[in-house]
Image (cartoon, rainbow, N blue to C red; front, side, top):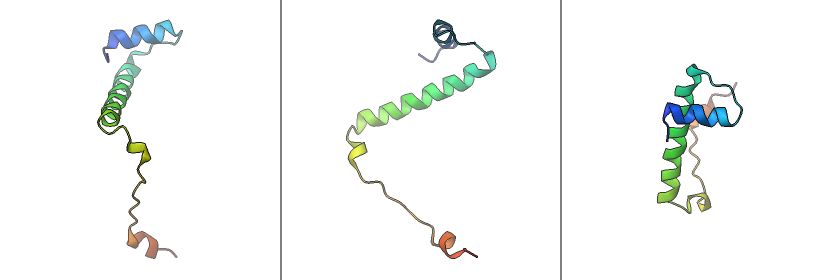
Length: 64
């Protein structure tokens, strides 16, 4: 679904300008979204987990 023709048509149907230079960026963003969706499909309750925060002690000690 990341075909350039599909993206151009989608932009056109929404009344947005189509810039050839932007197509590759849009493809990259759509690919990233698809990868994130795959992760959510594999772990659907991931948003219920408490995130882990790792702090670098060197950054905390380097305050002047």
